[in-house]
Length: 120
Image 1 (cartoon, rainbow, N blue to C red):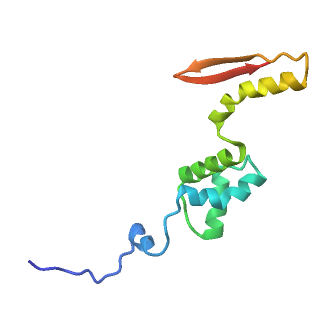
Image 2 (cartoon, rainbow, N blue to C red; image 1 turned 90 degrees about the vertical axis):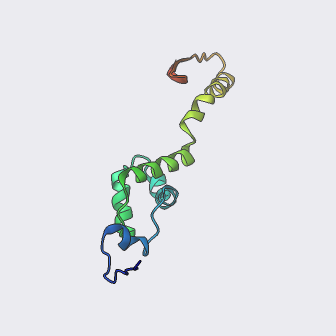
Image 3 (cartoon, one colour; image 1 turned 90 degrees about the horizontal axis):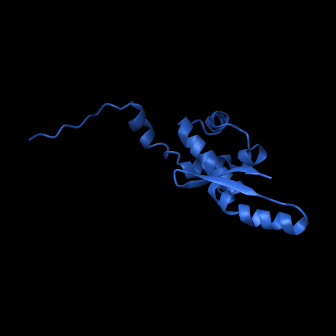
């Protein structure tokens, strides 16, 4: 049995980057773009991806940037599903602060999940 050692430098993308930078995780992306998302909630993942690329000189997959932005929106605005659980608290507060107001919550269950369809 003989062991061979490759003395030539590897230059394929995975081996050339593995020792130099740590892969950008979704949490890192969320922390990096948090201020940009706070300034503009409507900023798109493509624009965030371009800003990260310009600032850090790295190329990150679009989906990972999208997921990082979603994490930030959940942090800033609260989780989307939690909003539906708070509807009845909202209804009670409106009726308390605006006597005579009537608030009806109409919802439907879609694939085991509640979905609000309209407010009055």
